[in-house]
Length: 304
Image: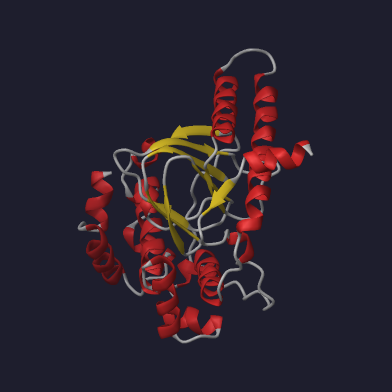
């Protein structure tokens, strides 16, 4: 009786679109991996936990948060103020205050950060041993009690990370365990309100998963559509319905995010970066990059 009472008084609302966990349930076999011709060597994601204010994520340029990309570590975004749009796996939703967005490693995403946006991004580190959801979750927390509970857990983790007291690392891990429990409970409470995703949303989820895996291959939208068993026109249409962007825009955004990252974080020549991202020539890469950013790759690199 106490558990049922707690659930009635701590309802959690999801957006009308379903969580991405159901998008992965597709009976068709996995598509073959097509390796990139060149790979850039970048520093690995730290294994340690970091808590960063969300506005600071865009300190190196808004493209660092708005462009489509994936991380190789899980992250929890806790928005406490402001609003905007966030795209997870090809599905765009609005976010507002007291939204918790969990993004597993490897899930393509991008979100807006406005002047009024506040909150924390909890990066859980490469190889985190915290028990976390298997799929992306976008939760709208309406009740004050779970809002306060999450904020307190994050504060406790930060306090231990900043502490020099004996056992601080161990204490931080225990608080992170509570964070995982908090997520598990809120997802469980929300499951009853989840609607089965449409065929269109499942297709977009498969496309973005494939895109994140193979965006360096140089393939175009027609190639991805063929691998998914649909026409390019249909793929473009469902992408527009799901996230208000055509399939070609998602592809270009992902490739050019990686280009900007490589230009700022490596000293590789522009030609090498062009080849690594599957562009047919450095000249075509330069034209595409300039059309998106207003700068040539070399000028972007000089300007940081």
